[in-house]
Amino acid sequence: MTDVEIIEACLGGDKDIFAELVNRYKNLVFSIILRMTKDSDEADDLAQDIFIKMYKNLSNYSPEYKFSTWVMRISTNHIIDYHRKRKQETIPLDTAIIPPDTDGTPEAVFIQKEERQRIKKLVDDLPLMYRIPIIMYHQEGMSYQEIADKAGEPLSKIKNRIYRGRKLLKAGLTTEP
Image 1 (tube, one colour):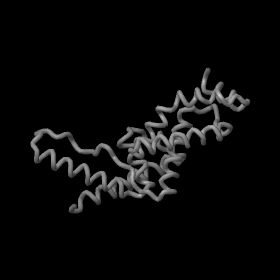
Image 2 (image 1 turned 90 degrees about the horizontal axis):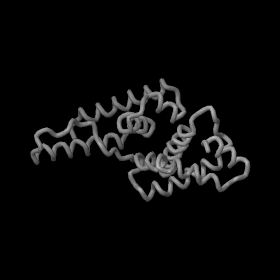
Image 3 (image 1 turned 60 degrees about the horizontal axis):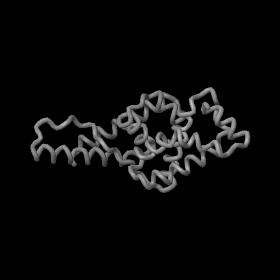
Image 4 (image 1 turned 120 degrees about the vertical axis):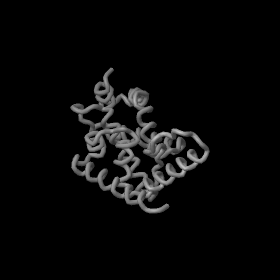
């Protein structure tokens, strides 16, 4: 069955078939959450919340769009809302934008590790409205348009937020640690 057929069956009263959508999209949802929280226990809890939210809002899904895009948008928005409610302003960045270590000396490895931690802290300290697009663009490799689609924001606003976020990061990097 296609996603749309499953959704129609769910909306028609077949509640058990929703498990098929969960099986199809559980890895996608979990990976989105894990990238933004870095906590697998928290990701499990949030994934359950997201699937409940999806089930309750199936009637709002428009078949003219890909279901996976709708799933990603709900997941991303739910995580953003979750962080707002908890007033938690940290989303870890697992890899920094630093060229790979070429000489491999202990000193170079230490300096590179410190620089990664510094960049991670700078990204974590960005306001959420800049941090999320920066992570989606640089860490997840998403295009501006994909980010705009997922966030439900105009493309110009996403470009502006990434530009301003980079500007804040650059200012933080040019100051002494």
